[in-house]
Amino acid sequence: MPFKIVRGDITKMDVDVIVNAANEALSPGGGVCGAIFNAAGYERLKRECAKIGGCKTGEAVITEGFDLKAKYIIHTPGPIFNDGAHGEAEKLFACYTSSLRLAAEHGAESIAFPLISSGIYGYPKGDALRIATDAIIGFLTRHDMDIYMVIYDREQFAVSTKIYRKDAFDERTKLLDDVKSYIDDRIEGEESSAPGSSHYKIGNEKIYDFKQAEAKPKAESADIDLMPSEEDYSSDNGSVYSITDLQRRLRHMDKSFSQYLLELIDKSGMTDAQVYKRANIDRKLFSKIRTNPQYRPGKITAVAFALALCLNLNATRDLIGRAGYALTRSNKFDIIIEYFISRGEYDIFEINEVLFAFDQPLIGA
Image 1 (tube, helix red, strand yellow):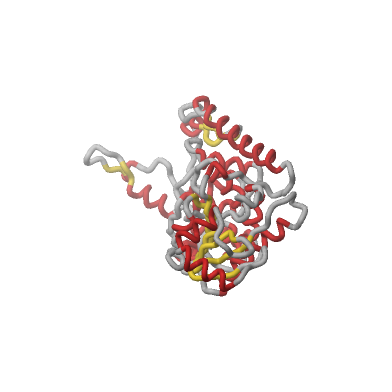
Image 2 (cartoon, helix red, strand yellow; image 1 turned 30 degrees about the vertical axis):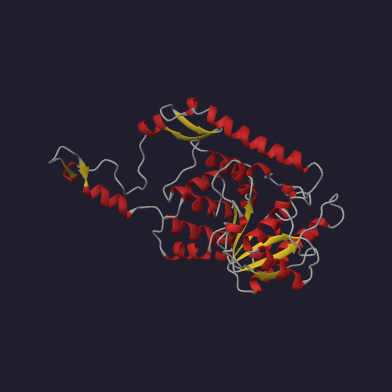
């Protein structure tokens, strides 16, 4: 079910369907179109397309995949970009919905798209990606399918915004600059707030007071003794431990990640499906989490659920902490996630665009 942005060659994708950014005549072209014809078998695909005769912009037709790993090729002509005021967005949106509908009709479980119209047709890449994302998200709310957006060259990739306008490039640049400054500020501040000082901070938020923790230890529950009685100790090999104390602590363990996640979902008022789709998580993976109270997800999966539930920073740290993880300043991924959560922005697909731009692992990927 997840939507994933990947960098690579679409002709080598091991999926049921790959999508060709075609022209209306369905004739061999350049760029992605030419690469697909060559990889599939130029003459055979050319003859198959000639039989179909053509396809209107925004619509889609299907052929065999021939020499490709993919069983099918869906051909959809994208719009030529003029100024954005001639229905280009609607036509581009239709390219994705028409292709996805056709793939579903042929029983496809996975599909790979190029960034349609963003090459010689001149569609601004950031806007093209946002339109693609909106169409794909809409489809995934009603269907299960693994969907890939294949970007050939990261340097040609631009982060999109939710608003299509002429100054969108400035908005994208500002977003990247803001994130970069946010990362730099936290990396540069590492020495002054490192563990060993009285407070460990992320931004201006105090996370842990080491001196206070040492001076004022607290029990997690009224009937748990931090200092066990002497009869609880054993020191036969020089070590000191308390079996009784350990048993007491184990009886008062916090809820596991799975247990707490399900509790949060119930409180959110959303269904399971709404949450795992918002998290860009596969239904099968969610089923493992639901049926196994001790299931320990990967860090990215844990973060994905925090984003899907729109948790604030403290609640996010609490949830992922139950799976054994933390948000730190030791890597860009954590700082980028903190950047968006601290601003109350939880659009996973927009966050993924920024993660992709900074060469970080993607949510749900």
